Image 1 (cartoon, rainbow, N blue to C red):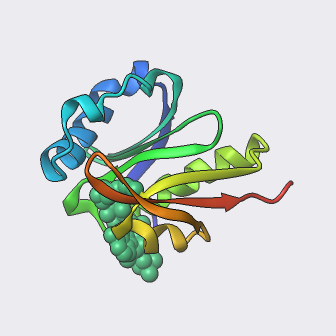
Image 2: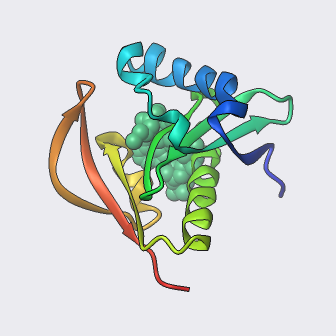
Length: 145
Ligand SMILES: CC(C)(COP(=O)(O)OP(=O)(O)OC[C@H]1O[C@@H](n2cnc3c(N)ncnc32)[C@H](O)[C@@H]1OP(=O)(O)O)[C@@H](O)C(=O)NCCC(=O)NCCS
């Protein structure tokens, strides 16, 4: 079955308004992260993935740094558990593999650990607080092509 959404890679320049709308809804309004913490000035240097509904509404996003660090993964509440997050991670992993990244990693919010484990990410180190929320580093080693 085809997904009721489309996944694309965007630059911050092209996607900023839509990327901001998802992150504002999820991180700032839902999770209570401050705008200062959310808008950390690092977005321009990242590769972004944006998910749009077939109506053209931005419903999910994430970013990846050149060193394979994935962050700011967010899906709007009413779109959760419909594989939008999976589609975003798969797009990130496709890119990382195509560009011979040896690994990718994420600072996972604790509630999202099972989500990342579904892609074989492995927990590393101790739980730490970031923006007041408990996180743990998780890493996925990628096999050479
Ligand atoms: C985490 C998040 C991105 C998952 O997105 P999603 O679109 O709901 O994920 P999917 O539908 O692709 O789920 C894939 C699998 O992970 C599981 N999963 C998803 N979110 C989960 C969670 N919070 N806890 C446990 N399992 C979860 C799903 O049940 C599904 O399992 P299945 O394949 O057995 O059915 C989404 O819940 C979200 O945006 N949360 C708020 C922001 C956030 O916390 N981001 C993560 C920062 S590290």
